[in-house]
Amino acid sequence: MAGDYTIHTVQNALQILRLFTMDKREWTLSEIAREKNMSISTTKRLLHTLEKYGYITRYGESKKYKLSLSILSLSGIVTTTMELHSEAQPILTKLLHAYGEAIHIGILEGTKIVYLNKLESLYPVRLASFIGKNNPVYCSGCGKVLLAFKEQKEQEKIIQAIEREGYDPYGSKTVKNTKELKDKLNRIKKQGYDLCIDELSTGITSIAAPIYDYDESVIAAISITGPNNRTDIPKMTEGLVKAAKEVSNRLGYMY
Image 1 (cartoon, one colour):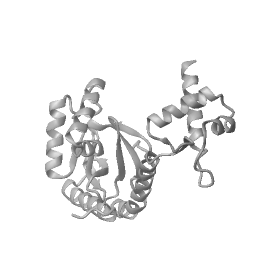
Image 2 (cartoon, one colour):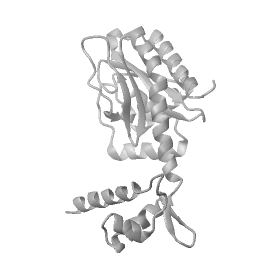
Image 3 (cartoon, rainbow, N blue to C red):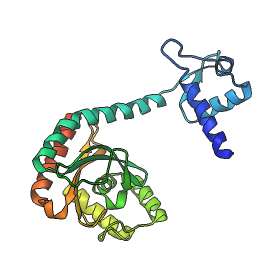
Protein backbone atom coordinates (compact mmCIF):
# COMPACT_ATOMS: atom_id res chain seq x y z
CA MET A 1 0.00 0.00 0.00
CA ALA A 2 1.08 3.59 -0.66
CA GLY A 3 0.82 4.52 3.01
CA ASP A 4 3.11 1.65 4.05
CA TYR A 5 5.64 2.67 1.41
CA THR A 6 5.61 6.28 2.65
CA ILE A 7 6.14 5.19 6.26
CA HIS A 8 9.02 2.92 5.21
CA THR A 9 10.61 5.77 3.24
CA VAL A 10 10.38 8.13 6.20
CA GLN A 11 11.87 5.49 8.48
CA ASN A 12 14.81 5.03 6.10
CA ALA A 13 15.39 8.80 5.92
CA LEU A 14 15.39 9.09 9.71
CA GLN A 15 17.79 6.17 9.99
CA ILE A 16 20.17 7.99 7.65
CA LEU A 17 20.06 11.11 9.81
CA ARG A 18 20.87 9.03 12.89
CA LEU A 19 24.08 7.83 11.28
CA PHE A 20 25.68 11.23 11.84
CA THR A 21 27.39 11.29 15.24
CA MET A 22 30.21 13.11 16.99
CA ASP A 23 32.48 10.17 16.14
CA LYS A 24 31.53 10.11 12.46
CA ARG A 25 30.22 13.39 11.11
CA GLU A 26 30.71 12.73 7.39
CA TRP A 27 29.47 9.91 5.15
CA THR A 28 29.78 9.08 1.47
CA LEU A 29 26.89 7.75 -0.60
CA SER A 30 28.37 4.25 -0.75
CA GLU A 31 29.10 4.19 2.99
CA ILE A 32 25.51 5.07 3.83
CA ALA A 33 24.11 2.48 1.39
CA ARG A 34 26.37 -0.22 2.82
CA GLU A 35 25.71 0.70 6.46
CA LYS A 36 21.92 0.70 6.03
CA ASN A 37 21.86 -2.21 3.60
CA MET A 38 20.09 -0.19 0.91
CA SER A 39 20.66 0.04 -2.82
CA ILE A 40 22.69 2.95 -4.18
CA SER A 41 19.68 4.26 -6.12
CA THR A 42 17.38 4.24 -3.07
CA THR A 43 20.04 5.83 -0.88
CA LYS A 44 20.77 8.51 -3.46
CA ARG A 45 17.06 9.36 -3.74
CA LEU A 46 16.69 9.70 0.05
CA LEU A 47 19.85 11.80 0.31
CA HIS A 48 18.63 14.05 -2.49
CA THR A 49 15.37 14.67 -0.61
CA LEU A 50 17.15 15.36 2.69
CA GLU A 51 19.52 17.72 0.89
CA LYS A 52 16.67 19.45 -0.91
CA TYR A 53 14.96 20.27 2.39
CA GLY A 54 18.19 21.42 3.98
CA TYR A 55 18.85 18.66 6.52
CA ILE A 56 22.12 17.50 5.01
CA THR A 57 24.70 19.05 2.70
CA ARG A 58 27.66 17.98 0.56
CA TYR A 59 30.99 19.70 0.42
CA GLY A 60 34.52 19.39 -0.97
CA GLU A 61 35.86 17.18 -3.73
CA SER A 62 34.96 14.02 -1.79
CA LYS A 63 31.27 14.97 -1.90
CA LYS A 64 30.77 13.63 1.58
CA TYR A 65 27.49 14.35 3.32
CA LYS A 66 27.16 16.07 6.68
CA LEU A 67 24.32 17.54 8.71
CA SER A 68 23.34 21.09 7.80
CA LEU A 69 22.40 24.02 10.02
CA SER A 70 18.68 23.26 9.59
CA ILE A 71 19.12 20.56 12.20
CA LEU A 72 20.21 23.25 14.63
CA SER A 73 16.92 25.08 14.15
CA LEU A 74 15.05 21.92 15.21
CA SER A 75 17.37 21.60 18.18
CA GLY A 76 16.57 25.20 19.09
CA ILE A 77 12.85 24.44 19.12
CA VAL A 78 13.36 21.53 21.51
CA THR A 79 15.62 23.61 23.75
CA THR A 80 13.11 26.47 23.87
CA THR A 81 10.28 24.08 24.76
CA MET A 82 12.29 22.49 27.56
CA GLU A 83 13.33 25.91 28.88
CA LEU A 84 9.73 27.14 28.73
CA HIS A 85 8.55 24.16 30.75
CA SER A 86 11.20 24.49 33.46
CA GLU A 87 10.92 28.27 33.81
CA ALA A 88 7.13 28.31 33.81
CA GLN A 89 6.47 25.46 36.23
CA PRO A 90 6.91 27.32 39.56
CA ILE A 91 4.88 30.27 38.26
CA LEU A 92 2.10 28.00 37.05
CA THR A 93 2.04 26.21 40.39
CA LYS A 94 1.72 29.53 42.20
CA LEU A 95 -1.13 30.55 39.88
CA LEU A 96 -2.90 27.24 40.45
CA HIS A 97 -2.82 27.59 44.23
CA ALA A 98 -3.98 31.21 44.02
CA TYR A 99 -7.17 30.44 42.09
CA GLY A 100 -7.61 26.65 42.10
CA GLU A 101 -8.51 26.39 38.41
CA ALA A 102 -6.78 24.47 35.61
CA ILE A 103 -3.69 26.06 34.06
CA HIS A 104 -2.51 25.39 30.51
CA ILE A 105 0.44 26.34 28.32
CA GLY A 106 -0.25 25.97 24.61
CA ILE A 107 1.45 26.44 21.25
CA LEU A 108 0.11 26.78 17.72
CA GLU A 109 0.17 23.82 15.34
CA GLY A 110 -1.56 24.86 12.13
CA THR A 111 -5.19 25.63 12.95
CA LYS A 112 -4.99 23.92 16.36
CA ILE A 113 -3.71 24.81 19.79
CA VAL A 114 -1.68 22.01 21.41
CA TYR A 115 -1.20 21.90 25.17
CA LEU A 116 2.41 21.49 26.30
CA ASN A 117 1.57 21.51 29.98
CA LYS A 118 -1.47 21.32 32.23
CA LEU A 119 -1.91 21.70 35.95
CA GLU A 120 -5.16 20.11 37.11
CA SER A 121 -7.83 22.07 38.94
CA LEU A 122 -7.86 21.71 42.70
CA TYR A 123 -11.62 21.15 42.53
CA PRO A 124 -13.16 17.63 42.24
CA VAL A 125 -14.74 18.21 38.80
CA ARG A 126 -11.98 18.68 36.23
CA LEU A 127 -11.67 19.65 32.57
CA ALA A 128 -11.36 16.99 29.90
CA SER A 129 -8.06 18.39 28.64
CA PHE A 130 -4.60 16.85 28.81
CA ILE A 131 -1.03 17.42 27.66
CA GLY A 132 -0.89 16.88 23.89
CA LYS A 133 -4.60 17.51 23.36
CA ASN A 134 -5.47 19.95 20.58
CA ASN A 135 -8.39 22.34 20.22
CA PRO A 136 -9.43 24.72 17.44
CA VAL A 137 -7.57 28.02 17.42
CA TYR A 138 -10.68 30.13 16.82
CA CYS A 139 -12.55 29.15 20.00
CA SER A 140 -9.78 28.61 22.56
CA GLY A 141 -8.20 31.32 24.67
CA CYS A 142 -4.60 30.25 24.05
CA GLY A 143 -5.32 29.76 20.36
CA LYS A 144 -6.76 33.21 19.75
CA VAL A 145 -3.96 34.87 21.71
CA LEU A 146 -1.30 33.15 19.62
CA LEU A 147 -3.14 33.91 16.40
CA ALA A 148 -3.59 37.56 17.40
CA PHE A 149 0.14 38.05 17.82
CA LYS A 150 1.14 36.32 14.58
CA GLU A 151 2.58 38.41 11.75
CA GLN A 152 -0.22 39.46 9.40
CA LYS A 153 0.85 37.24 6.51
CA GLU A 154 1.04 34.14 8.68
CA GLN A 155 -2.19 35.07 10.45
CA GLU A 156 -4.03 35.34 7.12
CA LYS A 157 -2.68 31.97 6.04
CA ILE A 158 -4.01 30.31 9.19
CA ILE A 159 -7.38 32.07 8.94
CA GLN A 160 -7.75 30.89 5.35
CA ALA A 161 -7.12 27.33 6.52
CA ILE A 162 -9.75 27.77 9.25
CA GLU A 163 -12.23 28.98 6.62
CA ARG A 164 -11.61 25.86 4.55
CA GLU A 165 -12.19 23.63 7.58
CA GLY A 166 -15.21 25.62 8.77
CA TYR A 167 -16.26 27.25 12.04
CA ASP A 168 -17.81 24.44 14.05
CA PRO A 169 -19.97 25.56 17.03
CA TYR A 170 -18.26 24.07 20.09
CA GLY A 171 -20.00 26.38 22.58
CA SER A 172 -22.95 28.76 22.62
CA LYS A 173 -20.68 31.72 21.79
CA THR A 174 -18.21 30.16 19.34
CA VAL A 175 -17.22 32.61 16.60
CA LYS A 176 -19.27 31.99 13.47
CA ASN A 177 -17.22 33.68 10.75
CA THR A 178 -13.92 35.33 9.86
CA LYS A 179 -15.11 38.88 10.50
CA GLU A 180 -16.07 37.97 14.04
CA LEU A 181 -12.74 36.19 14.56
CA LYS A 182 -10.71 39.15 13.25
CA ASP A 183 -12.61 41.55 15.50
CA LYS A 184 -11.67 39.39 18.48
CA LEU A 185 -8.03 39.17 17.38
CA ASN A 186 -7.77 42.94 17.08
CA ARG A 187 -9.24 43.37 20.56
CA ILE A 188 -6.88 40.77 22.02
CA LYS A 189 -3.83 42.47 20.56
CA LYS A 190 -4.89 45.83 21.97
CA GLN A 191 -5.68 44.63 25.48
CA GLY A 192 -2.91 42.01 25.68
CA TYR A 193 -5.04 39.02 26.72
CA ASP A 194 -8.18 37.09 25.76
CA LEU A 195 -11.38 36.51 27.70
CA CYS A 196 -13.05 33.40 26.26
CA ILE A 197 -16.53 32.70 27.65
CA ASP A 198 -18.77 29.85 26.38
CA GLU A 199 -16.70 29.53 23.18
CA LEU A 200 -14.98 26.16 23.45
CA SER A 201 -17.56 24.79 25.87
CA THR A 202 -20.77 26.34 27.22
CA GLY A 203 -20.41 27.19 30.89
CA ILE A 204 -16.62 27.46 30.76
CA THR A 205 -14.46 30.61 30.95
CA SER A 206 -10.83 30.76 29.86
CA ILE A 207 -8.49 33.73 30.24
CA ALA A 208 -5.26 33.62 28.22
CA ALA A 209 -2.17 35.78 27.76
CA PRO A 210 0.96 35.58 25.57
CA ILE A 211 4.41 34.38 26.57
CA TYR A 212 7.29 36.21 24.88
CA ASP A 213 10.77 34.87 24.16
CA TYR A 214 13.97 36.94 24.43
CA ASP A 215 13.69 37.91 20.74
CA GLU A 216 10.27 39.53 21.36
CA SER A 217 8.37 36.78 19.55
CA VAL A 218 5.28 35.20 21.12
CA ILE A 219 6.16 31.52 21.49
CA ALA A 220 3.30 30.23 23.64
CA ALA A 221 0.25 31.24 25.64
CA ILE A 222 -0.82 30.59 29.21
CA SER A 223 -4.43 30.21 30.30
CA ILE A 224 -6.54 29.70 33.39
CA THR A 225 -9.82 27.86 32.80
CA GLY A 226 -12.82 26.97 34.93
CA PRO A 227 -16.61 27.11 35.27
CA ASN A 228 -18.25 30.50 34.72
CA ASN A 229 -19.69 30.57 38.24
CA ARG A 230 -16.24 30.17 39.85
CA THR A 231 -14.39 32.63 37.63
CA ASP A 232 -13.53 35.97 39.19
CA ILE A 233 -12.66 37.66 35.90
CA PRO A 234 -10.95 40.84 37.21
CA LYS A 235 -8.76 39.06 39.77
CA MET A 236 -7.90 36.09 37.57
CA THR A 237 -7.09 38.30 34.60
CA GLU A 238 -4.72 40.38 36.70
CA GLY A 239 -3.04 37.28 38.13
CA LEU A 240 -2.74 35.54 34.77
CA VAL A 241 -1.27 38.52 32.93
CA LYS A 242 1.23 38.98 35.74
CA ALA A 243 2.21 35.29 35.55
CA ALA A 244 2.65 35.46 31.76
CA LYS A 245 4.96 38.45 32.19
CA GLU A 246 6.98 36.61 34.83
CA VAL A 247 7.48 33.61 32.53
CA SER A 248 8.44 35.93 29.67
CA ASN A 249 10.97 37.70 31.90
CA ARG A 250 12.53 34.36 32.82
CA LEU A 251 12.92 33.59 29.12
CA GLY A 252 14.78 36.87 28.60
CA TYR A 253 12.03 39.19 27.44
CA MET A 254 12.22 42.71 28.84
CA TYR A 255 9.00 44.68 29.39
